[in-house]
Image 1 (cartoon, rainbow, N blue to C red):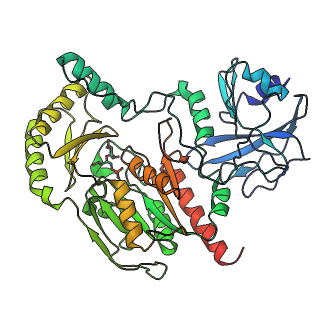
Image 2: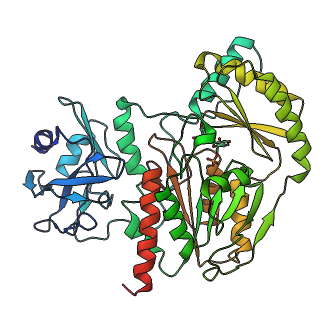
Image 3: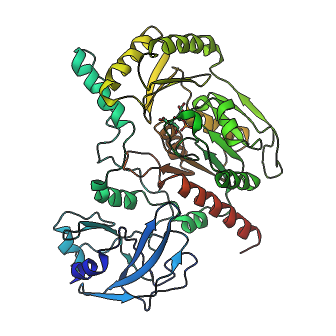
Length: 467
Ligand SMILES: O=P(O)(O)OC[C@H]1O[C@H](O[C@H]2O[C@H](CO)[C@@H](O)[C@H](O)[C@H]2O)[C@H](O)[C@@H](O)[C@@H]1O
């Protein structure tokens, strides 16, 4: 029986990726399914998540009637996760209907639990010889996991208020727990990996001019305890540099522009610091690929500078006795970090910050990854920065542009939203944990972002050679 076969094959594999179509199952991987089948599951172990390398270990072919035929193939390393092509099989397909009873199925994919080994396996099954998926952007993800609860802070009742704020602060930076593998797997299926779908995405974007937008923390650099030490690797820097040789590229960060520039150290990029409220660039570098090759400059919140400085001073004074708390001046906005603060006092720290902001109705408070962010209450965010940059580059009304925005945080949702509203571009969320998002694709961590950027460059080079 199908599940038994998966069980015996599966114990040692922590992730299963699935694909069919009787064609190459992995990039750079020569194995094809041995014969066209109605559906097939390719099992790939991804033992090393850092570099996404894995081994294809077996193919389970599903015949009509639901019988499974394990078809072991030689293992060989693959540099990327396999292409992943979710599709629908009829719901009365015998294997599915059995699994469906367990309520573990969406109409596109299955999550099968191997109870004995505790292994949770995400599987998508693809029909062979058919056009399996649309090249259009997937629909927005519907939240099911309780992250980003959008819970309004309770306005009265001291203790309750603090508990609510603590919950909200906790929710702003969900971390992945081992027991969430099932959620994880089904989430990856709902928000496909931009690496797995890479070639399909690129094929769909042929002829369009790509503009790349990159968040910094959690996207180009891993999240670390000390915000001043959030360095990106040289390899990542090279990848960004290469991307900028072929596509206009912008860094869009909550950091001050100067600070994020100092981390990235590439003058050929556009920089939108302070959540997009401080845009400038590029100061040098290849301009020949740019449609609008002029430097840009935009600071829509200039008048707030004295106020931000004032609040910075008050906050520094106020939280100096909170162990682990840190105020970061990001020029047009401020960050109050609580990553290193004892969770028991998150609530009271949050209250102290709110207390300060109360006297400044022109400022607003939002939350990021273990950080409270204070910024001018003007309608200007990373989404506006994206639109401003597209306009500056001459792509305002263009159908011929494909903005790619990669980010990991709540503030990046504003940019994902803009892409959705424009009906163009790719929003890619960097996250291991399921989150409500307006992005269309996912990448798990900065190392995957780097691979994505490298593949973008390879793809561009080979398309210039006419391949
Ligand atoms: O828009 P971003 O570039 O993602 O900036 C958002 C905030 O990122 C930084 O804080 C985050 O990263 C720190 C370093 O890894 C980490 O310690 C902190 O907990 C994260 O929230 C930055 O320090 C903030 O100022 C930005 O607002």
